[in-house]
Length: 398
Image (cartoon, rainbow, N blue to C red; front, side, top):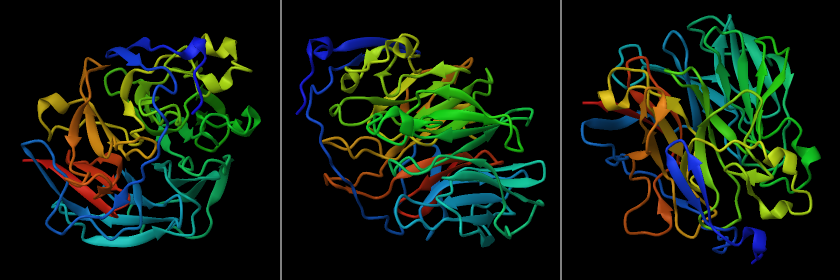
């Protein structure tokens, strides 16, 4: 096991938006691997929500549902893609009567390339493939995308294969699109030149022009949403691996334009990564921003959705749901749940569990599923993508 030098051999306390966070020294514990065995759910089983909520199946037998997008007309689009053996398709689900049982289910698009983010804007349907952003002309209610679409933006593909997702978000006045791009490596292992336009969030015009790098140093930003009170851009980020069981905590954070969030040279502000001692990039580290809300180590926090509906109780108003896909680089599992971060006047509070039960009781290696995207429906219910069990769960308030 690598040993920390004197510069890195003690714990560090950093101040986050929700209070102090104590970070152990790098390699305080050995970096270990524990891979989950996904066994799925019996027909009578569901994840567990707090009292006052009901969980049911919105759709089953999908092919790795990772992300959902609700079009203005209420149609639900499910991105089906995976790191290996990807379906590379989008399924349309239409629930006209709002009873939680879609009457229509069709394959909306196929032949894609590790697709993830989706967006309807200005008469186009956008799809973020891993290697580029494409758009098709689109009419509300349309049930199939035809042809190959128009590629309006090249995106860097390849590299670390768990960072293939490219998400999309439009601003409030619908004049800019934000594109998340994960890193090509764990911690710049193959050189910084391989990370060009990666580990960042891009901003473009709806036609793909005018690209700027909006924020950098975000190892794998996946979920993006707007804080409904402050109108700040927020994202969920997977932090780096192989520094031990309890480093480095994943997080959600507000995102400043031109902000740098540390990856790969530091984490949680100026806490230096010991793997960059020969070229520590002191100038960048000095301006690294401490993320707002830590969410546990190796949780694979991917989904992010602010709740703006009125179906759920008042405590959930303007708070954020985060899907945690679950750990692999830890001796004991962490994540494998959906957490809720309450917000008051636009400021975050302490995270709490919302949807649990994904870990099989009494067994140290088996899990029922792995949640990813969280999406609010027009009626205020919430959909949760359960990637490895191929289910979309629907959560409603009783």
